[in-house]
Length: 227
Image (cartoon, rainbow, N blue to C red; front, side):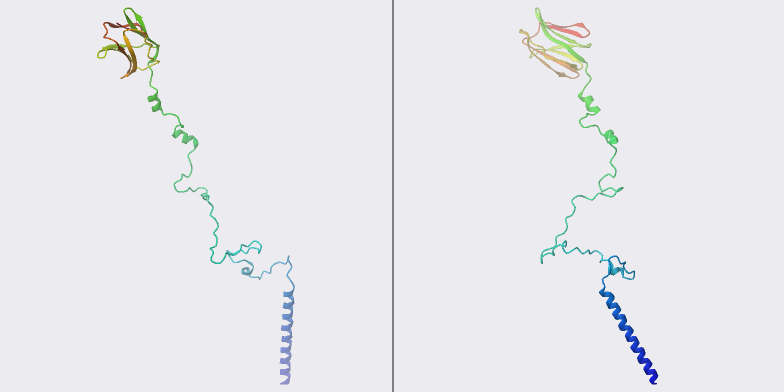
């Protein structure tokens, strides 16, 4: 019986000495700082090494001062420039790909260039140009000479109250100008205008005409005599 008690006591004492020696070894390891190039023990938990998700600690000299109590924290300013859509996707209301420059120019005329319809309306086809339109004396009256660079047709008629001599040139002629009126007792004034499809000259008279006639000198020249 005594032998068993002695052996048990020795075992307890030996175990206690092993525990004390173990705790002393651990305490000495904690006092020694780890080397900078020492690898991290593989059994260390990743949760201990990794920072908490979404939080990054700033160095003491870069950390912002905490807001004053009662003052709302300032939010970062939003970027005023709109975010560019990812390639291959377009924003609502905007074409994904603009048409090529050549296609866009083909669809619409250049700025300031009139359309073919407007050009035709603004630039009618001319019958020719008037090279001479003048008044001359021929006793006992006067005559109006009209000449063009192309064959022309002319017609005239007389109106009264007031007295007028009207000459029409069918077509549209360039270069028509009011002829100079020399001193006389027949022609008071001359007006030029447009009537229907003809250019018109109106000679206002001082008195009714006694005689008047149209003479064709050539295909492109006529005279209207009156007195």
